[in-house]
Amino acid sequence: GQITPVPEPPRLPILGNITDIDAENSARSLTSLADKYGEIYRLHLPGTRIVFVSSHRLVDEVCDEKRFKKVPNVVLAEVREGVHDGLFTAKLEEPNWGIAHRVLMPAFGPMGIRDMFDEMRDISSQLALKWARHGPQKRINAPDEFTRLALDTIALCSMGFRFNSFYAEGLHPFVHAMGEFLTECGRRSQRPPLPSFFYRNQDKIFQSHISVLRETAEAVLKERVTDTGNGRKDLLAAMLKGRDSQTGEKMSDSSIIDNLITFLIAGHETTSGTLSYAMYRLLQNPDEYRKVQQEVDEVIGKGPITVHHMQKLPYISAVLRETLRLDSPIPIIGVHTAEDTLLAGKYPVYKGEFINLLLTKSHLDPAVFEDPLAFKPERMLDENFNKLPKNAWKPFGNGVRACIGRPFAWQEAVLTMAMLFQNFNFVLADADYKLQHKQTLTLKPNEFFIRAILRDGLD
Ligand code: HEM
Image 1 (cartoon, rainbow, N blue to C red):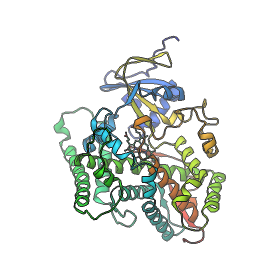
Image 2 (image 1 turned 60 degrees about the horizontal axis):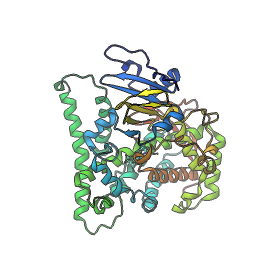
Image 3 (image 1 turned 45 degrees about the vertical axis):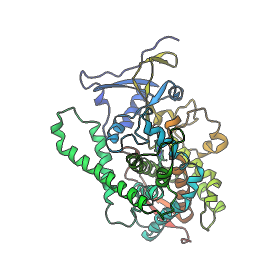
Image 4 (image 1 turned 120 degrees about the vertical axis):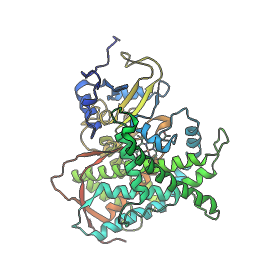
């Protein structure tokens, strides 16, 4: 093929393309640039250049881990201040990534996740009970409530810790510190490069939030080590007991703390966003809504939900998959180029250059998905899902650096959907609501309120 330079939007001398990106919603700006410049473009940002790919064929090519490897992007680089080489923020070559990955894989496997079902149901039931008590008139901020659910679930299942977010007046100090920490990570990644004394106060507050996170996690760890009679089988237990199959090493205390905090960060907004977007899609699509309710009524009926139901709700799974295609809470993943190379045999990219995969766009590629903007869960039923081209659906990331929490998130989301649709009918609190997104570390619906009307009493 003929060499084709990667399109580059016009830029300013020093700031480069920084003014092309809306700090409040960079995912939207980057998608609009793809609409304008096509399947690949390059931006120049202070100190760095980033190539963006957004067609299925280019995303597929960049998923080749021999040629392209995950690197923590600019925001993740800030998150590293708090959780170092924890699983999410580690560079692949850092030894703690491999050790933690191998120690934790079994705990995140199907057996490990099944063992967590009862605790997950405990938290989902708290949500259902709270909504039942609210009554049908209450405006429910769905993303906020799903965030409480996801946080309480991951804290309980990973380390036996209860935030009790549904009942507490204010936020738990850990949760407050985590929110502030993540917001500040976003701000830091966009700071103008001024001398460090200029940021002294912010930096001090940032460090104090990190201390709260680490001291809380450390206290949980210490308590577990001394409480030898505790027979819990959770992620903390797996990390304390496990040995790396390759090196025979155990995880250090500091690596365990990094990863406990990592699970809370990685596991709460993503799951919350998924449930919120799913609720939104179903409220926009009454036929699909009815099919979810029908499946729950036929498979579960009015009795208790058990772990055995989890494999028997294919339509709910398809709804979640289709939701994640249309709105991925993590809209972009980043890799870095090992050698000078050509993409699609014609676009030159250079060694060390960052490439971002724009999932928000590749998930809508008309070459793969007919009528790409339509919400059609049928296309995600196993028989169709399994026939999708490779790397056409990537909401959980890629290869060895894909989401280790996927089975965890899936069980929690399926269970929660089943519990909610078993017990309630839902309506939009604002009939004319138009989907808006709120971007923090992840994307979620913004200002999205629903009302929950009991069907016929909780069992
Ligand atoms: C990695 C998505 C839930 C823990 C990732 C990545 C994505 C992702 C896209 C790769 C990021 C990258 O390439 O930089 C999601 C979505 C979720 C979800 C959409 C919910 C629907 C969870 C949960 C946990 C979790 C519940 C913890 C229990 C992690 C960890 C990694 C990761 C530790 C890093 C894995 C590694 O690099 O070794 N996730 N995630 N995630 N996720 Fe999730």
